[in-house]
Length: 253
Ligand SMILES: Cc1cc(Cn2cc(-c3c(Cl)cnc4nc(-c5cn(C)nc5C)[nH]c34)cn2)no1
Image (cartoon, rainbow, N blue to C red; front, side, top):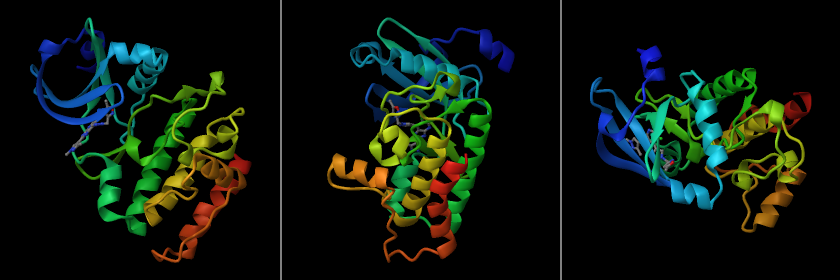
């Protein structure tokens, strides 16, 4: 039961390890099955040496603390964690249809219906997070997974924070950051709303709105909110309005 899961201490022998699902900067993710319940999970294995070298232990602790307390159909569950001499293991929900960015690469861009479904799921998940004073701060296609029924799941709360201790540090890739973060000034939950607008653009056009060859040019385009809509693919004016309104929405938030 959930209560017993909460107390019990997990270890590697509780799981049959399956195929590798992906790799990140600090380790790998494997398909795994918990032996007693036969429950399929994704086991994220992180190397302590690499976590120490990059001084991200505090971020990992926050990711576990925040994600383990969130319960929402569009947020990937973190069931628990354990560690041994050399590694930290996160027991995560398995998203059966994989990583959303690979799907976007394959389709080039999404239909308005599909984009709208994903954006509304994301909006509901962010409303839930913000109500709990949690901001994600790193909403991008690489952090989105797809569940067995095609539903979107926000993963990787490595950059999330509780808003009462807002941070000024830079984080995440620039593309999805709003002006106030790129200028690394005070920021609040509205940073996630900005990223939602950036994602909406990328779902419909296949590229993020402020993409540029040089980092400095992306930075300049974000600060200026230099938003341009390509002529192809054809996108409805209401979709373009929604994306353009996000900036005004930020001012309102
Ligand atoms: C380290 C490290 C790697 C990654 C990126 N990453 C996330 C996953 C992953 C997770 Cl956490 C949960 N469910 C998944 N399902 C898949 C998957 C399913 N199919 C059919 N194909 C894939 C791939 N991947 C999942 C894997 N890698 N973050 O930190």
